[in-house]
Length: 344
Image (cartoon, rainbow, N blue to C red; front, side, top):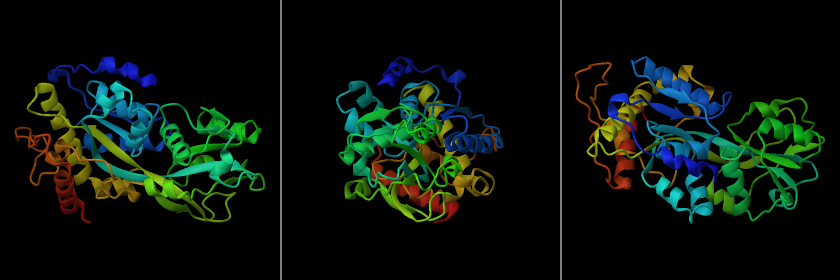
């Protein structure tokens, strides 16, 4: 996998030069816009959070684990399932998974498969030409896992962006393409998509519905789509790492940075919903996806009465929750504090 080369970046820098960074996605995607919303909210409290572009979920996942001074990344929640399925034998990736935690759940993203009309189901993609997204992107991750779980083997797997894939489909150079994005996704509003030639494939496989959240794309969501389509959705999450403030100065300052941003999001959540990207209005901060455990430094940021340094520069930080706390207890504490902060 291309990102294994990032392992050489794992050595931390000194705390005196600590930056706060969040890995997001491409320049026009939802992830980078939501990252900018978080950075703007942090800036209102005098905190600088650098928003970094990336290829998507896999790069973000490994970046949080292996890049110095990178405390956050926005990923799709099935990244853990993907790594367990496809990378269980790779020791570098196994090490990368250790210590990965969730900061906050974000919005659901529907799995769209736009296909020719003669393709009626996911199983009909066998032996077809199918674009599964750019390598290391969230679409690539989910499409690979969906096809594997459904036991569908395309004849050709094309690694292209959604925009390029749409053109390839219109030119009859592929038969279908995956795109994972919160509906409505702008690309499917194109008037070039002829409903007589193309449609969204339903995704109703019981195995997939057990792994992903069953949902429906409502009729008329897109100009070519007259009827509702049953699909599955994956949740986007803001992930972080389980920094140990007792380990060294770098971990202590990184834990403080995570706690600060967690407090910013929880205390300014209503403002994010009102003035941030529309997807913020679909975020339920208490809806933790299975398999993810909340970071201790996030819990520290949700401690009642904790003061941000911009509120009181001399106030002590509470970011000393020791790692290793039972995850179920941490998640229960998280839900309790979130409900106290934003209501449930």
